[in-house]
Image 1 (tube, rainbow, N blue to C red):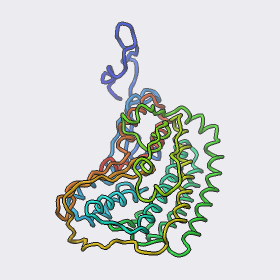
Image 2 (spheres, rainbow, N blue to C red; image 1 turned 90 degrees about the vertical axis):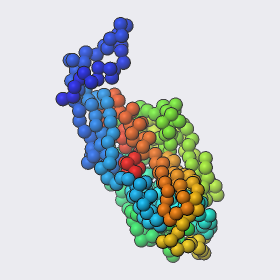
Image 3 (tube, rainbow, N blue to C red; image 1 turned 90 degrees about the horizontal axis):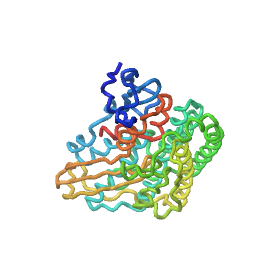
Image 4 (cartoon, rainbow, N blue to C red; image 1 turned 120 degrees about the vertical axis):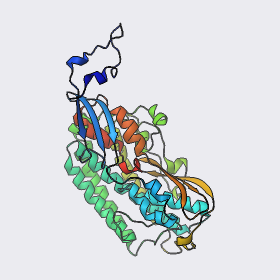
Length: 392
């Protein structure tokens, strides 16, 4: 049983004389834990909740149960040794770490990668966005008791992992974008197999619309829940779908164009209701957008040609002194690497800017107040976070 006196100042005064309208001595406060092993938690993290009845009065987040300390590890490794390390920072979406790290190193070293490699990187990043959105959509539905949707989305996500395996040989960690370019282009017949996969995803999304978005129970539980005020966006550094669902059109692909996105035809998807239902529906629309972008890329990208720049001996690679920041748009918002070099064979400093710290810590701890215990999992999933980004 938690000590009620600790929360004497937690509630704002309500009476004219400034005293609290709540009699703390007659109300019981209980501490409970949700996670780190829990289906309603995004990865291995934990929520320390103070509850009164079934209502959350305070929320504290705890991380560090999985991978941690990446930034300090990179300071003690050569540049090429950092490459297979960074993808572990966001396991369901590792490719953005590969791209951001490689791009910062290339900019500092003055390396220009071939045209085919630029297109290939764009393709991989959109494929990664698609798989991550599918995984998230299944988790969001499962948090509200609709596990069948998670079965469907994980099935089609697995089909997309087949396409990754064709390209790189890896399903989870592809490690296909080292500094200098990519390890290869698409194999023969890839476009046809990708098109078949995309059509299957589109068919499944029709069933998801019927089962999830037209479901009266899901609507009743998610509409109006987890509202993000547009005024919080800049205050908390909110990015990605969490910001766009609040009507703020933040998208790095448009705001700070990179790779081949300037040559692709798409608009930033936004909404205004800013609740869990709206954020989930916006991500559904993002899935369809990624499908369209992958098709555009496959039409335009070269299928042959150089895909790796001429590189020095990477085991004895010394990069000139400098610093740079490279950003990209992952499924959760702005993802960036700030890299500093001192002229040695090791990074002087690498700082990873992932959206999870803002969304899973500062934002979650505020939004959980007054939330029902049964809705905590759905609220957490709607913010879409990966804990290793926090304890990096």
